Image 1 (cartoon, rainbow, N blue to C red):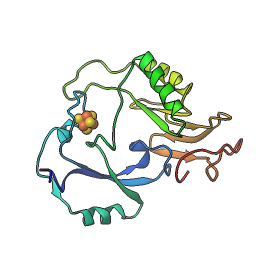
Image 2: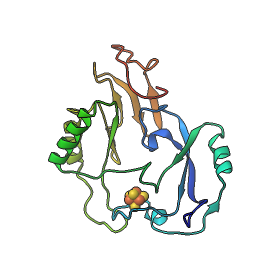
Image 3: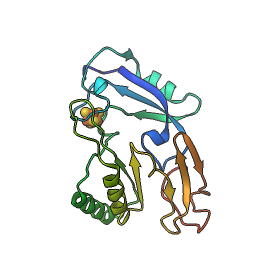
Length: 198
Ligand code: SF4
């Protein structure tokens, strides 16, 4: 059993978009919880206060977590902030690598949403943040191969567009979500989107 078993470092009712999940019940909320520690120690960790320490937090049982996850307005339970298998951010600004990765993702032939998060200096890494222009370039490049590509840690780049007709179908402005998808389809051309609860 790990030392941090049952120790909660942080919990919040978060917008689902913050996970980030853009193709799963847009505009909904989910009870999000984090423990102390992480099996990685990334130099740019934005949550290093909890991911790189082991402290006493709020003790909780699985049953209590399940109960909290069912509170009003919560879609379920999300382990986040410090767990790499459920929350992994990418800070990669090499054009060739993004191109190769996009092509590999396309070959998987599986619907997916790809989130490119802008790097910011944090914890032990003080290199300058990814330039916005570079991120936009990578975004365009990735969109040549992958239908749904989003940007994180930067303004813009988080709306969902129909891959068929280009209509903006889920408009995301900070916490405001306007979902125009009709029963999983584009209201303009009836293209079927992948996702759950759209
Ligand atoms: S929480 Fe994420 S960014 Fe932080 S050390 Fe763990 S894997 Fe790295």
